[in-house]
Amino acid sequence: MTRIGRLCRSALLLTAVALGTGGCLGSGTQEGPLPAANESATTKITFWTPFSGGDGLYMIDLVKRYNQENADGVTVDLINNKSEDYYTKLTTSIVTEEAPDVAVVHASQFAQLQAAGFLDAIDGEAGSAGIRWGDYNPAVVEATVADGRHYAVPLDTHFYVMYYNKRWLREAELLTGEGKPKLVQGEEGFTRFLETLRERVPKEVAPLAMPSMRIDAYWLWWSLYNQIDGGREMYTDDGSLALNDAAALRALQYVRSLYAGGLIPPDVSDAVKLFSEGQAAVLFLGVWGTGIFEKLPELDFGVVPFPTLYDRPASWGDSHTLAFPAGMIKDPKRRTAATRFANWVAQHGADWARAGHIPAAFHALESPDFRALRHRSDYAAAAEYTVYYPKSPRQGRINAAAQRSFELMLAGKRTPAEVLEGLKRTIVENAGEPRP
Image: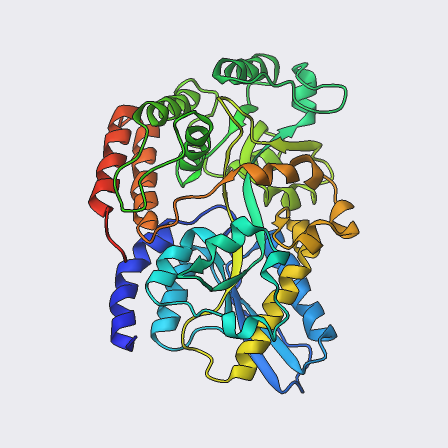
């Protein structure tokens, strides 16, 4: 692919990719390289991440450890980028031939980047780098495969869970003797659970904290839609509309009811901060919140899988992978070093799991170090019920349009039925396009 060709595709990708990802990227990351531990190394590779806060610190520790322990004469320079424009910067760096050797890529972004030719397959290097694909969660591996070729090393699975403040649930008599929430399956049961919290905790405490902007409400809808019999699909492999109107509308109406009924306070800008400060009884968030909240000794919290309100358990989720920007490494030794490093990080996923994520490598998942971590065992099995977005290069545009539409709904400017019709139009407009 020519540089001009990449630039044209990049221009089409940037908006959808940048808007289509949220949550675990965080904000406020300091940019710049991590000082190398072994300046005499003969091979240096660069590694980009969008992590901040707890995620970023755990990855910094892993890279430092690799630089100290590897006997291959390899030094890795870690560069943390601002999350808000990470994918814009990554695609631009590929166009301008300034990309890193290895980069974190969400599984939800994979179809777009791979279809545009922005990622290189690593099947040729996998054997010499010690990679055995059977060592990894097959669902995450599958997300990184296209045309029968592997384009990344799986790192983790992360998904929606429910955090709860034990103090407030205990005060509302909604905590079991084992310290778990007293939840009743179904819409009515969960609504009553939140209403009881509102009745029995101080007025300034939110029953459920979620932002009215960003992509969180869309994650909530996707989780609930996939719980309903007949849900799951948006479109078929050939791009035909396959959204189940009844299931999609039911989930939309329930999301809207939580906001309209005041069970989620209006205009929440930072739900994590609200929960961290004890001003929310319940929080829906990805598992990356675990590492954040564990650093707050004054916060007595618990975490359980996302509640099942309908016919089956399901929860929005995504995965971090370690991918290889296209055309950047012409030296096979350097590409093999980058691939070996990515495999090492993934195999040490128990250390990365301190941030809250569930390792993709079975070795890490079964290790004593992972099993010794608190809270992870409370939700690790829920990884089985993670539901990814459809694997298509057009999904980023659909997500971005849906996010804007959801924000209008929560502001009272659109009805759930109007949001559904808009989502269907977006799917139809993007149907059948093989590339973004």
